[in-house]
Amino acid sequence: MPVQVVHFGVTEDGVVEAVHDEGRTVVVAGQPFTLRALNGHFVREDEPHYGTRLSLRAA
Figure 1: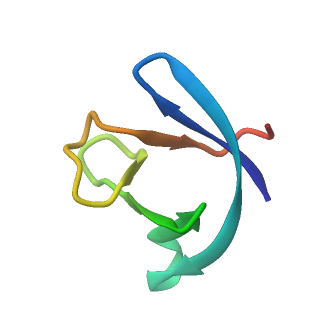
Figure 2 (figure 1 turned 180 degrees about the horizontal axis):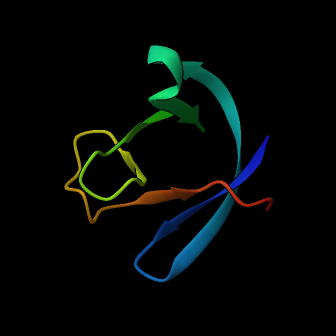
């Protein structure tokens, strides 16, 4: 599934490679993004809730 990785105003295209934890973690370009309960966004693992996020809109 094509997605976009968004960080500091820069957007990169990517593809979901894997889905784990019943959909709460997705892997894009080898990096896991976890669903945050605070804001409902997928954010790169080990980053704060406002960090690099994943846009599930088609790239």
